[in-house]
Amino acid sequence: MHFSKETLALLDQVNQLYPGSIVLRGSGEDSGILKHDQVSTSMLGPRMAIEVNDLTAADVLATDELLHIMLSLNGYPQLFFQLAVEKDESLTEQMMVMTSYLYQPVIHSIIYREQAKHGQLTGKVIQAYLRGVADTLEPEQGDDMAQAALRVMVLLDARVFLAAAEAESDGKHLEASYPLAWQAAGRLYQTMDSENITDPFTMHRAIEAVFSGFDEQMADWKLPLLNAKEFVTVTPVLSQRQLRLKVNQVFDIKHVPFTVRDTNQAAYVGLNKADKQNSFVLPTPDGEQQAFFLAFYQMTVQDLFAQLKQPYTVRESKA
Image (tube, rainbow, N blue to C red; front, side, top):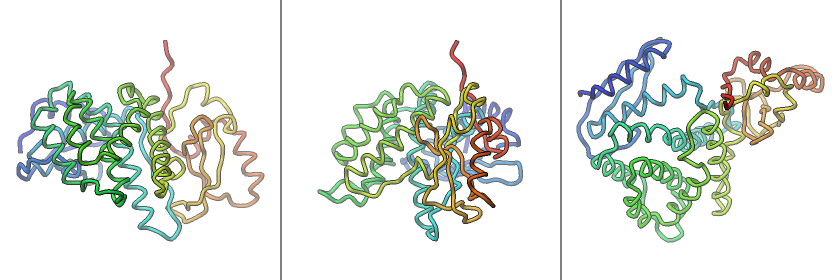
């Protein structure tokens, strides 16, 4: 499989930032379908291999993966799965997958625009993407809600894709097959303000908006809530001023109905006061809890993240 010169140039660019090396490989045939599970990554020590296993849109898949890496290396928010549903590995895995599905349209708001700018979202790619959606989702049938959550997540990404490709008119086929989910995805698309996701702060804001909006839709349909705002840790984006403040001025600590994945201990999360998003996880403290939390709350935010060894992004001040 041959990749374009632009894709290989992006690979070189990412390799200059990545603290190891990345290799790009390809195999497979042209299925005529584009799906994001047609690319995978694997690690061998500091070496990452990106494997594209379908010829249909190899450059789109490769650059999507490379741009994900580049954005993470430049401080754009990532998801960290530090919590688990107690004694329910299957539900934990399901929540991780669903939360990742919701994250993708947000980061794709940047990635698809970049791919469109470089002429990658061609008519062939658009049709392959739409076939990928049809291959993933069954059409809506009356009040059957078995795939309702999946439809909303997949179609939200489709709305972002078609907007970036300037092919919104192709959405009429999706609307015909999935009318309820297409409308719900449209409401989420408006909430996330996709066109204005341009930096780590606006991306973080969009992630929080999608998590909240998704649960509102699930509640409206009387389906189980995901509760991603408490379940998943999102890289916080903080101003220099916030870093100097005490923890209790920026975060609320909440005991949540999950356990710490690595230890199975009861967990506390730090919820940002502004958006109530999980920004860090604390295990149940040893010893006297009141003294622990009193001391903890008096730390500066910067000292907290240094102690937790958890990444954060500094919000750029406006000129």
